[in-house]
Image (tube, rainbow, N blue to C red; front, side, top):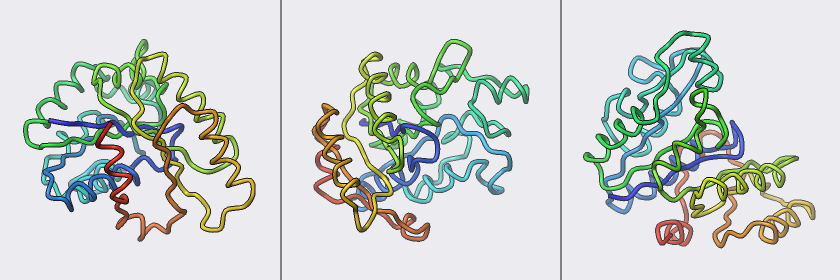
Length: 229
């Protein structure tokens, strides 16, 4: 059973968009794909069925009917890092092994599992553990998502530095919301990323409206490179 982690350089960079696109792509090839958002936080419940909007998007993309608590075992009713949210709301605190246990159970129902992170790698889950610690326990290849905005190069390099320190394997880097009409700076950014980042698979996803994001699938060449890692 294969799995992959989708993380980001920050919150709001498009992790869910990329994870959902990957799920649709695998599903279209007849693969029984499952999705998981182990940790989520939001001020309001999204729907009767799903507490998190990200969970709902992932479930729809994969076409699964798994229960919300299976896809998202740890949810906090405060938009903050899980450790901070749990400290304030007094909701059940995270245990990494508890999240891993939920993941192992979900694995038995699918042939491929996509795990979407929360925030970036150094988001604290507990007083002593971050999402990077969780990713290290999983020992699965990882896709890093970054949003094309000022500061992206710094955020990418910091994320890759953490990845190396934790022994995490980066299967690909996605530059999300890339301009449809790239400027000289935009094109130079891609060149700089390739120069400074020791990653073979670097992809761009254009800036898309919300309705197009809900239909996005990854190009076969991109998918093949990710799956070959």
